[in-house]
Each structure stands twice: as C-alpha cells, then as structure tokens.
Image (cartoon, rainbow, N blue to C red):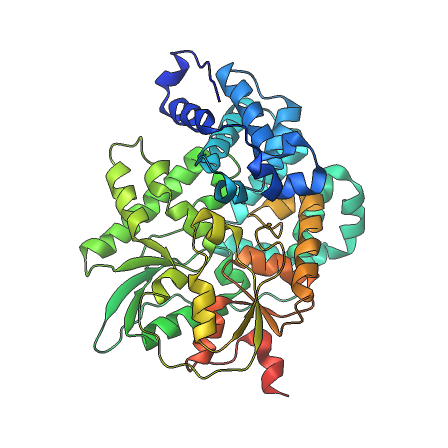
Length: 433
C-alpha cells in the first residue's frame, strides 16, 4: 500500500512502525474471510483491510479521529485472525494498538463511554477490587433488562450478566519447591483468572510440581497490562510492563528461571510483546525483550517436558483454541497434542478460527456483537456432543459458559486430572455418577 506520511510525522517511532505495517498490506482481502466482525456485519470498514484504510487516512493526515472511525476501530476484537490469514505478514496488532492509543489521546468520547472505560481500568486489573465488584454485582442484576434498553448503559448490563452467581474464595499464590528439581518457573498470578477460577492456578502448580518443577510467584508482579493496552491506555500498559519486567528479572538474577508461564493466553500475547511495547525506553528495551523471550503459554512449556503417565478418563473434549493463543502466539498443536496424549478424545468445532466474542473487555464494551459471536461459537461447540469444553483463556471460558450447556475447563485442569490430580470442579458431577 502506498503511503504519503510527511517526514515530520515519521520522526515519531510509533508513526514509523505503523507506516511500515501499512505499506506491507497488498489489498488482497484474504483477511475479510476470517474477520469475525466482517463475517457478521458484511461492512468493508469492519474488516482489517477497511480499518487499515481508515487508520492510514487518520495517521497520515494527522486527522482528529471522527466518531465513525472510532466506531469501526472499537468494533475490532483484536482477535488477530487476520494475521494468521495474511500472506504478506502485516502486523495488524501493532497497527490497531497504535490507532487505539492515538484515539485515546485525541478523541473525546461521550461521557458514558468515558465512565465505563475508566471504571474497567480501575477495577479489572486489581484482583481485590474485582472480587469486591463481583460480590456486590447481584444487587444490580434485577435491573439488567432496564440497562439493556438504554444504549449508554448496555456495558453495565453486560458486566452484570458476566458476573458469576458465586465468587470463589480467594486462594493465596504460594511458591513451591520440589525435591530433585528439574526446573524453576515463574507463574503469572494474573488479575481476573484467580478471582473467577482460582482452581486453574492450583491445577497448574500441582501439575508442574508433579513434573519436578519449582513454581515461583514473583513479588511485585501485577496485571500484565493487556486490558488497558487494548483500550488505548498506552502509558498505563507500559507502566504495568515495567513493573513486571522488574519483578521477573529479580527472579532471573536470583535463583534463575527456565520460563515465565502464563495460563491466560490473552496475557501471554501481551507479555510476549513487551519487547515491542517498551522498545523506545532505553532503560527497559533490552530487559523487556529478555522477559518476552522467557514468556511461554503453559501448554507450550508442558509440551517440552516429560509429563507423568496419564490415566485415560474416557471423555470427549471439545477444544476451543483461544484467538490469543492460535493467532496471537501461533500456539496451535501443543494443547491438542497434550490432551490426546493424556487419553482424551479431541473434537474441534467448525469455525474454530473465529473469536468467541470475549476479547478482553470487548464483551462489555461491544455486548451486541460479542453476544452474536458467543452464540455462534457455542452452537458450533454443542454440535460436537462432547462431554466438556477445554480452552486456554479465562475470558473464553467465561464467554462460552454463558451460551453453552457444557462444562468449560482450562486445558491444564484436564491434564492435572489425568496425571493424578483431582476432578476439575466443573466436572464434579462425573464423580457422583
């Protein structure tokens, strides 16, 4: 794609990076076939190619973002399916992230949007605040129908619909040591996952310990920054990245780390991109790149080490590949192979490349599109007549559980169970049959 950025604009490293991404696009349109919003809405401006045109015009001409441009950028899920399809290697992720930061600096949203975005940024990255919000959510649930009818309040209705009926008791993240250690890993503590499903972390620690690995939770670590990053709050995301880089490198410089493991693939995609996020920070660029190189999805790491002998459970598993795992990190075979080797009968739904509609805060800020995608995903999964759904991302698990009648678990919970761990709590009914 031809560009005409003025030289003074290209003095900005972010503009230079975006210009290079835009120039890589060859207008082929392959991305439209795999873009969830284009598949649903049929609007070229709600496809990656259309959004690239909008972003090019906005950045190249230093335009103030219009409400229409913001609408189409907001509708992007950042599922990155387009990057898997693209034959030209267009890094759409970096381009749309830059566009969101540009919009956040230069566009004044309506007051309700500003309020909800600020509320999400103040609550979701902080586990204690998030737990408190979920605890009081039942008080507002009777008002959901009213909030749904008022366009400006639909995000509030979506928040209430996503809130679980019961908030699990908090579980402490405690580092563990094993005799005859084979490895030492840091495990991301996370923000939403330990509040909604603490059993995922517990299963991960048990499984890694069984494999002979110490698991450490780094002091000072916090939210990875993905949630605020995808809302255009670039400086907050960079601050989160710096904090975590410092926390993990203290462990590297201490007893050492073989890897930094992540059980929420949305977080993993962002952490693996810390090197790019902090590339212009002289004090952190190299350190962030080192952390990104150490970061791995838990399934990636488990596929590289020896797991204990599994006892087949005889269950059929519908495997949902999270977008952030299959498109963002290109981890496609490891989770499936691990499940099959553990004795599960694997089934993959149709349209496995399409997003379920969770996408971080998307199912709150864009609830109508998210619900359509969630229903479509659940319908494809339910057609498999599987016993359980497995996925590698807490957002996907929450979204799919809203629309499917099947229990939904993390991949690592099934691996833990097959190698000597307890029955996943979502499958407790099996132990009672």
